[in-house]
Image: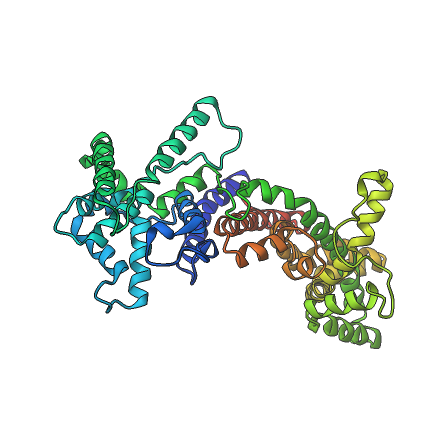
Length: 483
């Protein structure tokens, strides 16, 4: 069995890599822009100097998550004056014939090029043949593109060196933010600002003196793809752009709710469905079996969101009854409760969510158990056990039920991701802040780091659950061996 486990674990590595690649493709090529709501509001005009705090926050956000970088390969070290001038001209639209879509694209390009665009912007700024508006826009863009990325700005528990670096970068970025001018600014002001930029660029010109190895490193590794795999290898899911907290920390904070809700549901499902399935198989085609089957199929056909809302209105809001709490995982005053009171309070809150999350799976699993037992109940070894004079309960539970449970064990592969993923519908309807509602909110807010973390963790647990499910076959059927 050890050899089998080793082979399966080794096979899980490329499988997980393939799943991770699919998740990366979906997240990066899905319609919409992550965090795009941060760019809306004041500052959407042509003049970069009026971009406003929201646009600046959006730019910093994209830098933090490499969303301003190309997906697969990066050749921005080759950006020159002509490419920069073309984008600035499109933003200005001095001729009046540039479509709005092209102007938005040009502004996005300039922002995403970041510091790679600095040499070209300096070239346009110092080009006396360029129009005054073009040179003014170049100065305004330099106040953004010339800033260094402050990689540790969201990191907690900084060391002294990291804290000093953050302060130094913030100070340097703050200095250059004021080095811009308008097309109609006084010549003395323009000359002063151009002198500032000339001195600054001369001091920092080494940042853009790319060697062959630098270009190779940028081409391969300064991309979203490389950043994604680098973070994944270090189990670093980044920070949420919603509240700037580490994603893994947020995921862990949600486990308390989803594990309690989902694990209780799974226990209830198996505790009821297995005996019910065995009972139905013994009484196959009797009136009782047909009634139970009809009821279970009716339950299975009811949508969980409909039942959840119905039960919420029927039993929590006083129309006609008010038995259970309306929403939430626990009461607001739990800090004053004893352990027993707290457990009672939580149990009272999750009765309805557990029921609404269990009835459909209970109906399905009981039918799987019934079908699995019917496949083996007429087998030769079962007839032999009866012929020996063994009690019917021993024949069913010891001989038939064990071999008939293999389809049920197959479903165990979904147990672990269920504990993590939770139930999106149930948690949203009942206001439980677990993994399901967290995933739903993250998708709505395009918090891609959070979505990626939940999907990857669920995928890994699915693979582990499949392995546990396969190994459990040998426990119920001695004919199965992994040698």
